[in-house]
Amino acid sequence: MNPTLETAPSANLSELYAQSLRVITEGQIVKGRIINLTQQDVLVDIGFKSEGLISRSEFSDPASLKVGDEVEVYVENVEDEQGMVILSKHKADRQKGWERIVNNFKEGDIIDGRPARKVKGGLMVDIGIEAFMPASLASFKGYANLDALVGQQLKFIILKISRARKNIVVSHRDYLVKEKDQVRQKLIESLTVGERRSGTVKNLTDFGAFIDLGGIDGLLHIGDISWGRIGHPSDVLAVGQQLDVVVLAVDRQANKVSLGLKQLFPSPWQHAEEKYPVTTKIKGKVVNLVPYGAFVEVEPGIEGLVHISELSWSKRINHPSELLKVGEEIEAVVLAVDAKNQRLSLGMRQASGDPWQTATEKYKPDTKVVGRVRQLTDYGAFVELEDGLEGMLHNADISWTRKINHPSEVLKKGKMVDVVILTCEPDNHRITLGMKQLMPDPWSQLTQQFQMGSVVEGTVTKVAGFGLFVEISKDVEGLMHLSELDLGPSEKLDERYKVGSKVRAQVIKLDELERKIGLSNKNLPPASTP
Image (cartoon, rainbow, N blue to C red; front, side):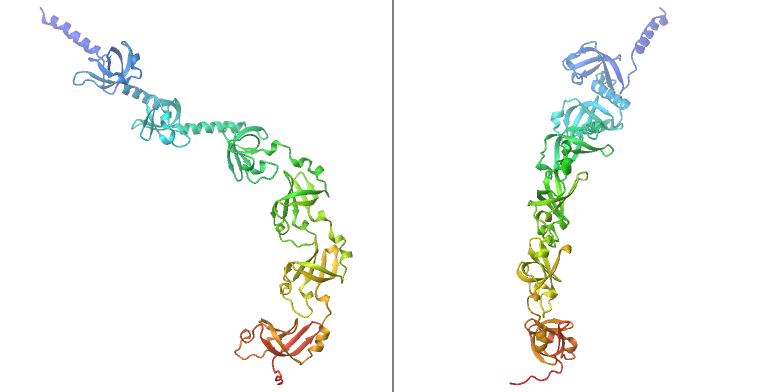
């Protein structure tokens, strides 16, 4: 037999066999067919010279597997020690999943997934491949119950794709935030000023309440809760309370909504001008005191201002608190009503009548009256003659002979005093009073008692920089000027003379018109011996 003819068929068969085998490389994903199943393994034919074994545990549903099923597998090793191909279903799935993710998604995209298992620091999430989600990114409120999330189908945002390490980080919290922002944006776009909306009281503050409108919080300012005055939103609202509100303003750029509650009810100012005509006498409660007056609540939602000038006909009031207290009920007269600007002007003094209308008859000049010292000032004292009427007692009208620097030297606040009416001017709301006029002017007698050149003895009442005041008779003082004092070259006035010390002096000036007595202790004649 021809050797060439015998070997040729054998060579052709080998070539045909070799050509029938696929070119398989490690790291490649190939299709194969299940040719046998055991309790632990799956035997897969991938068209190579040997089959490969894969553990049943690598399949998501091993019970459904059957001979003849086509599967995609990952070639880990083309031949192990037993000549078998090492295959992996898990790595094939991961590789396909990775390629699907990087080809179809980017960082910031939303993807569906299911937390598969809890690991240190977070969860492994199945998104086609396993991605890591830190525990802090599982929910709105920090660290959620991670065990409760396992197995749930959720949505995530891809935060990071690392191609070098082939790992992905996802966040469920970022998806929730984005979803909430979309709901908020959609809701704020739908809001219309003036419309009525339902909401829930979410939080209370000193300045108002935040109302959840179903995705966006609106501010209900304390001034828009009630037409009446309230101290704190908690006086009328509670967290969790359901209520209707009116949309007052919408700022879509800043995502801010202003709400009103009182606007659901008619304004009490609508009929204020008809209800409170000028000159009407009303009762109200003092709700606030300010330097310029008192605010009085006439009814819930309507407050009037009693200006400080309208509190009393004659009393000089520096602050309304001198006359009124918060919570006190008073009577007042309506002076003006401006419903459009929600202003009500009230007068308290008008409610009791104007005492100045009868003052001319009651307080004629030279009339002796009794009054109460109400206020002391540098220039005199205000004396209350009756409720709403007072007169001014100047320092110069307190004593004929004594120089009064301040009325507190002889008067006390609250004490009753006898005075005489000097002038009464109702048009100017002015009465002047005198005390010294209750007794005769003693100066005609003093000029006889203390003649020029006479020597007197007195008591130092005051040491001033320019000299001494010396009392030479009851309530009669003379001035010993510094130039008329007997002082040595090195002596000091306040060291030589003390208040209360006795001195001898000579009368060198006696001016009845100016009511002044001048004294000197220079060149005094010697005191006579008994």
